[in-house]
Amino acid sequence: MEAILPLIIQAVSGLVGGNGVGAAARGLSLGGAGNSIVGAIGGVLGGGLLGGPIGNLLGGAGEAAADAASSGAMDGIIGQVASGGVGGGVLMAIVGVVKKMMSNNG
Image 1: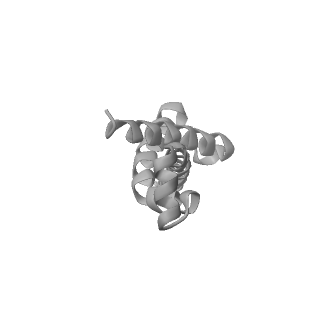
Image 2: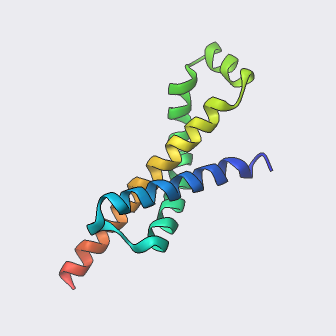
Image 3: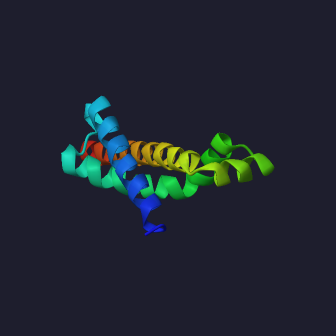
């Protein structure tokens, strides 16, 4: 269960990020379900790519990071939420732009 929880957090955060971008940039929106699916996928991908760097920014480096990790998992959760939300929003924007370009050329 401990291995699945970060993926769930990242997917839900990505879902929120994807829907946020879809609502903010209506021309890029893929609809509710499309925004959610692409956002969740982007959240998991973004969490994997950005989780380390964001975790280091929040937790510090070296011994400070080890102390932060041993004192609680809150920094890890915040990093997963942030990286998942960013990843979901970015992938949603990319897919929305590609969809818009394909519909203009078709």
